[in-house]
Image (cartoon, rainbow, N blue to C red):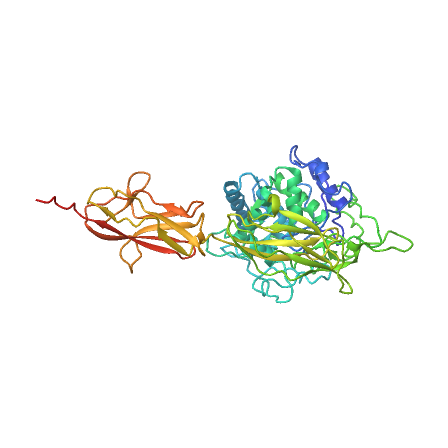
Length: 569
């Protein structure tokens, strides 16, 4: 029988060395071609931890259990108890959610090539597959899954961003649901994966699809090792976390099976040594004493349980020391970056713009020492986060700015793209693992507040014929041409009834059939909109055409259908 890793590793055991050893053992013991991520693509080869970045989970705690070397799938297809406890079996509804998310993204983001096994790997590490599949028929967890308060005590420090709406905590944020999104990230990436009209981080269908979209951000191709690593690190920024997820990813690629909902066994060990079975977790911080990384577990005999590796000590965190260590004996003068104790908002106002326009407000932050004074010459990175085409100058999605004498750094001007909705600008101190600052930005659709015809010529037509003139209007906003504004044109029943008429003038669709409502119209660069040709049926009378735009501009045009006047005797 092949040697099998123990089902649990205690705090600090999942270091780069252990996880890398697990991945290597998996690749060696299983079928050829399973390990499609090469050794030099995995983290940990250099022994360094990547620099701090934003994360979906706020670097909250996670389960550290490793999978067995073999995936036990009985010939009958029924999982054994060992299979369920090892994590090889995935609860039916949870597995269905992962596969539906993969299918959805194959259509919406085909270039991403997201495998459902990656969602399964993250779902196992973050919540033990929704606590062993304890979900209802719609995929919503039967009890909330909450991480610890992100109060800076061993974790990132994130003050409340949602008023407790998602996590019930009005002081600090907590990671929420089976995929452990922090509230601010959920606000940006929320999805309705089961089409029930709600976006709920506690629903596995919604959370899995949101996680997939998050992992696919920035046009990533997850079939490329480096892009896959970036995606995983963006979820929880730790080398140990990266290697652990890669281990489970390869394990699930080797094979898994479906088990009934609620029968999965929740992993016991968390990266913060939290209470077993209580939920998600963060990464152990390297020992400040510089103690060596623990060695891979040693097996007394084939099939036996491994002896426990020594722990590395230290508390949970982002995988980096909170305070940079000194260089050794003797005095050490802190660098400006080392002196920074916190990153604060320096008075940034509301970030709002209309599509295509520049934001009037710029993000401004201040690096602050423990004594409260500003720290100069510190690099601050500003990054655009979320599904948006807003950009910094030159089309950049991030920019690094050095603080001035007062410790302030101002982000470059933002320009809105054509995508409407919310996104965030996140500020972090380069070279330090400090809580990031997030600023919500909103892009509104282009608007018009006035519409007028470009001609005052009467619009008349004989029954059954074509109007000689087309309707042309110009949209303006605050007196200026309103370009690329969305508009709708409808042949309405009356001045007080805006529903589409069932008789009178009409437009034609691509097949030549009558239509009396035209949607998805847009003004041109000069704010002008020229409607298609109009036709009259056999019903004579006076009719109304109504044109409306985003922003509330409305114009009603009179159309007359009457027989031609008889020639004079």
